[in-house]
Image 1 (cartoon, rainbow, N blue to C red):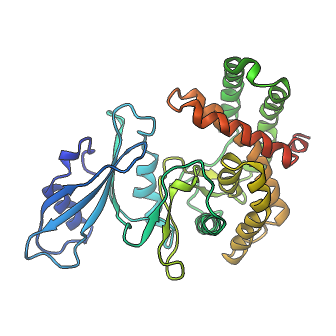
Image 2 (tube, one colour):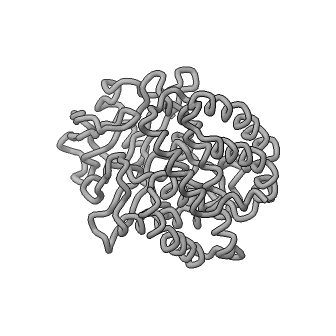
Image 3 (cartoon, one colour):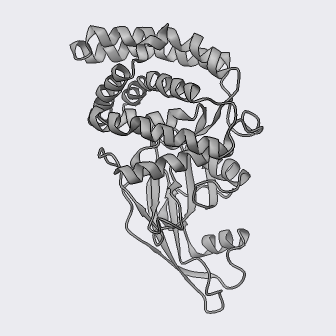
Length: 353
């Protein structure tokens, strides 16, 4: 890893030439100029780079790249995405991801950068939005998530050199965080959080430890999950037959149950009418893709249970967003409402017993 990029001016022709030679993408010649194009709206600095080469460079040399880096003090200025591209993505073939040519993180500065493949000619991006994806696009997302989960399902690297498996200690630490943060959240909302919903939070906190100890610590039927699968974190192929969706923005990946990603996609962002219309069909599609990919011993009943309990866990997601003091209420407040509606529709309270 090189020194972390903190300013666009550091993305010089010399730096890019060095990276492309290291990656085998440039066999002769050099980058002579870099056009920094308009910043793409995102929580990090994301800028397309247009490269020009010396006359002796290969005609096939990469013409475009994406540079992503963090601003000072940004919420997402952590090393998880760097670890994903540097250690996780290269370890399994066929993942629905884009290629990373360079990844660096500075613990001292709390900054990172990624030099990424530019798929703008073959894929369409969707800016972050509260609008749900059309049905066909939702199916593509589910297929991509299933592909990711199959590749890492009970993989021997999980918990060794890839991520941390859930342990009694890690679960207890999460419970303590909930015990401390939920009352503060409820106090902030005051009468905007009804007594019934406060009671649900109290029951959910009490259920987290015993249920997660029984489900997660056994270490069976776990996989690598994305953690933030909203519609803006996918690139959609222009060629619907010959190409596939790519998943981007990997700062929230972790080891968990696969259906948690599907629950996040729907329960966090969709209001009941659309969610009820597509929920069962999309989860069934996801489950069928798991079986087609070779997952064994994981029944539909287990998948449905994991999905419903993921909705309970996601009740704490908007509380985390609130606790950061960096995510506005216009984002996290609707999540509270949608998640409680999903909790009620799915009869999740019976899982407390």
